[in-house]
Each structure stands twice: as C-alpha cells, then as structure tokens.
Image 1 (cartoon, rainbow, N blue to C red):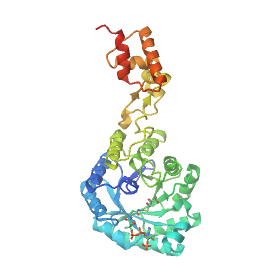
Image 2: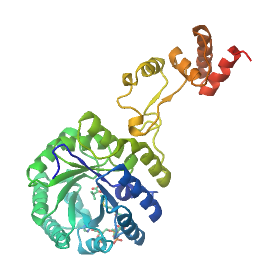
Image 3: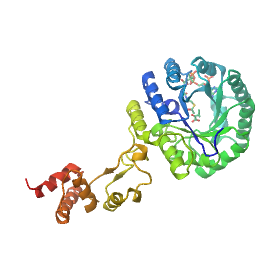
Image 4: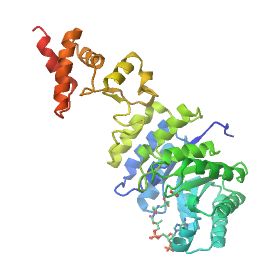
Length: 377
Ligand SMILES: CC(=O)SCCNC(=O)CCNC(=O)[C@H](O)C(C)(C)COP(=O)(O)OP(=O)(O)OC[C@H]1O[C@@H](n2cnc3c(N)ncnc32)[C@H](O)[C@@H]1OP(=O)(O)O
Ligand SMILES: CC(C)C(=O)C(=O)O
C-alpha cells in the first residue's frame, strides 16, 4: 500500500510524448529511452499504443522484456476488446484503457450516448480484469465533462474493478484551484483507488495543475520527459518531480541526479531541442550573468539557486556580458589561471562591457584574451 506522501510517477514519453507531430521513434530508440526511465526510477512506463502499429506492438514487447521485471510497463488501449487483446498479446500485465466522457467527444467523435459510454467503460474494464490485468482507466476530456456525469463515470470504473483512475485535462483547460477541487471530489468517490492526473500544457499550466491535483488527493502523475506531447505538450517530468520533492516534500522515487541526462537523451532521439529557459534541465536553469547574482552565487549558491545543479545532473554556467561585475570576472579569469589585482580587473571589465554593449557575446576566452595584456610573457 502507498504511504499518503508517496506519489507515483507514470511516464508517458513513449506514448503521449511520441504522439507529437514529427516524433516517430524506432523500436531501438524506444527501448533505449525505456531503459533510461527505468534507471531514473519512474513507477510506470507507458510503452506505447500496441494496437496502433506493428512497430508499437514489437516495441511494447521489447520494452517489457528489457525492463518489465523492475518497473510497471503499460500500454494504451481504446475501450474495446481488440485493443486490449493486442496489449495482452504483447505480454502486458497492465493496460491503460480510455474512452472520452465529455459531451463534445460523445456527440461528434464517438457518436455515443452517455449510457452507451457507461456500458462500454464497464464492459471493457471487466474484460481486461477477467484477463488478470492491472487496469488504469481514463475518461478522456474529463475536465470538460459534466461533473455529475464524470462522478458517475468514475464510480462505474471503480465498480468494474479499475485499479487506478486517471483524470486527463486533455486540452489543458484547467487552472490549479479548480483542478484541486475537482480531484478532491473525485478522490471522495473512488473507494480508495489511486487517482492519477494527466495534464496538458495548452495554457502553460500543466505542471501547476499536476501539483494542484496532488494537493487535491491524486497520488499518481502522468508526465513526459522535457514536457513533450500533444500540442503544447504534457506536464514535464523534471518540473513535476522537483516541485513535488522540493516544494511539497512528497515521496517521489525518481533519482533527480539523472534528470539532465534523461532530458538530453530524449532530446537527441526525438530531435526536439530542450528550451534554453526550461526549468531544471534547460541550459540556463543554473546560468548567471548579472554581477549581483554571480557575486551571490560565488559566496553561496543558495542566494540565487533554489536547488543545486548537481542535484539534477545539470551544470552552473557563469557568463560574461554587459551586466557582469568584478567578482564574476575574477572567478572566470581565475578558473583559467589568471590572477589580476582589482585595478586591472576593472580595466578588463570595462572592455568586456564595451564589447557587450555592441551586441557581441563575450566568452571566457575573450576575457582571457583581454586580460593577457597584463600578463608578463
Ligand atoms: C487524448 C489521446 O491522446 S487519445 C490517444 C490518441 N492516440 C492515437 O490516436 C495514436 C494511435 N492511433 C492510431 O494508430 C489509430 O488512430 C488507431 C489504430 C487507434 C485507429 O485507427 P483507425 O481505425 O484508422 O481509426 P481513426 O483513428 O481514423 O478513428 C478512431 C476510431 O476509434 C474510435 N475511438 C476513439 N477513441 C476511442 C475509445 N477510447 N474507445 C473506443 N473507440 C474509440 C473512434 O470513434 C473511431 O471509430 P470509427 O473508426 O468507428 O469511426
Ligand atoms: C488517453 C488520455 C489519458 C490522454 O492522453 C489525454 O486525455 O490527453
């Protein structure tokens, strides 16, 4: 059983992440990412959608063979026996069944009534359970679903035997206060089943909403490495994990020092660059140029860093530019074996600023070159 502070990390990089246009991983690439996710310590890996292609089917099988002993491997299935069978054929012991619950999806996409959807939820979960599977059920577009009907949907899934209920904010329309309240209501009708959240980033709120979901009682969060996924992406694994650990002191199994390498592996294999300003794993997440900040960080990094780069496998990057100060310049030169008194440093600093004022980037190598005039041969 889970402690009340334990939050499961359900990684869907290889399913929702891979659904993003332009990301089509080979079987080998998927297995490589799965191995890294297992090392990272996630609780579940959604390997893909086995019914969607032969490659997805084989990738799911291979991922199970590679890491299935030490981490839950699951796959997505529509609420029909064919998709569930395909997961079983791939060897899955866990399946993620979904069917939408919002009126807009029922009317235009599924062309089903609410009663038909309730029947389908019940039948598909019963079918998966009759094959001994762990079943996570998602009412797709839950957050645009009539609330009374959503509670009925959740109760139906629980009655049918679902082990976990995942609440997707499919088009990212929640805000944290509303989502926390919704999850809290759902938790109260879920007979102790783990409630999970799956947040999309259409309004840039995926991480905030995931955290709000946990505050509302969710004990599992769906995430993707670097936040890749449909449209504006999913909640980012690295942001959610570090916020849960550092800001809320939840018990999360992920090894944070592997976050940076995991991020870079996924970026390299998907071809999607990590944004410079990305929290936790971005190249500027621990970057400092402003003199006042650099001085503070040299004295004690806690002044301007809420977590340390080493903690997440990232690096501190001190830069030079028009905002530099003497302390930072001294450090950058001393790292290159150059020791100048304050007067000479001031001259070098004014030259650094002069160059930066012209719009040019100033590197540590530039600073060394400028300072070299003061060095005896
Ligand atoms: C929010 C999400 O991320 S949901 C997951 C979305 N992921 C994907 O779609 C990626 C994988 N998808 C695929 O490879 C293909 O879409 C397949 C194999 C699943 C289906 O392909 P096709 O049979 O060609 O159908 P297509 O994708 O055009 O349409 C979807 C069909 O599934 C039905 N459907 C959609 N969701 C569900 C569901 N959860 N349960 C049951 N049926 C569903 C639709 O009503 C439609 O049915 P119809 O063919 O009877 O009209
Ligand atoms: C299948 C579900 C969980 C999904 O990906 C979504 O609703 O975004």
